[in-house]
Image 1 (cartoon, one colour):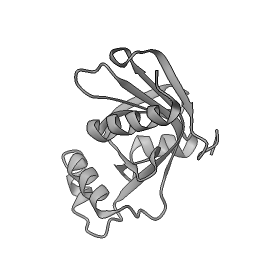
Image 2 (tube, one colour):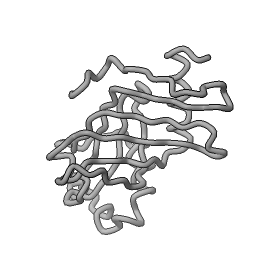
Image 3 (cartoon, helix red, strand yellow):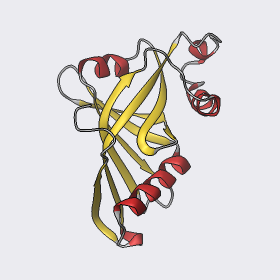
Image 4 (cartoon, one colour):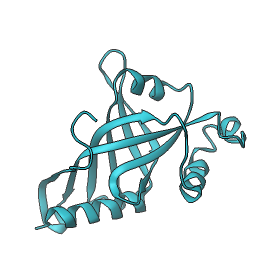
Length: 158
């Protein structure tokens, strides 16, 4: 059985290895909308994730009206899944470390090649996801019901 620290460490490992996750936002009708996105956790672990989007995408519009988000990550053989809930927002001043930018830009390039050629970085949005709840499920590691961790760094609704 994992303790909370071990669950956070394992979740961070899965997120870093997977890199591609499913991001869910809420549309104007209250319905979930899911899409594959590249995401990088900051140095604090899964408390905060960074991802890229064009400035005028539906996901940015969704976040402006309702910041509730959910991420899901897994890696082959998909015997461990990580689900993160929190609040997402577009950063007004998109400053991310260069290695984070490079990894995210490589993933996003096929989707937004015209946006990513703007060296000024004014044509894209950085989405930051502040995570308040982590759930990890891993039958192969003996976690047969979700291990839930409330992350104190970002309170519910922040």
